[in-house]
Length: 212
Image 1 (spheres, rainbow, N blue to C red):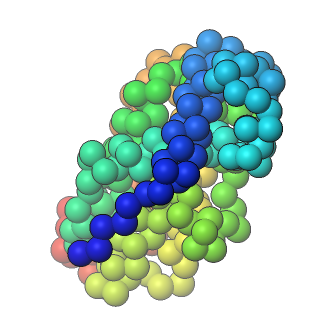
Image 2: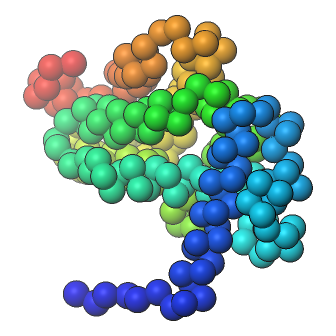
């Protein structure tokens, strides 16, 4: 196994990016997204705007980085192993995702899942570089590909299209949960909608093999 060691410059870059995103996360916990300007972020992080733009293209890029960094770390701590049951695999992955969202609190989620945040729009983003920024979707696509090879999912819909639709469903239920003030069980309702979506995509082999 080859162990890659970060250079001092790379380590400093990661440290600075994390410092900036932690400052933004702190602001999102206490203020509306309209307050989350680059000027306020830089003031909170105690960095210059030049430093900000050296590490991030814009505010949406920063918000995307927050979720990429956070969910990757969360996935590393809560690894989901693939089984033959594709529905359960996706549920398990989104169990981790919903847990990560809930850990950040309703104030943060209400500000993050906003029409002002263009970073959460994913339709058409299917290059490898773009998928690397969507670790949950990327891993779920792998699960779906395996399920198709096993004959458990219909072939007519692409793996990416399936995950695009699920991402829309998940964003919708999180948004609904936020505007309700967190009055319902986010995971239960999310899992129910994901299962409903899969029902039309599963093959007879799946229904004969697993309880649905």
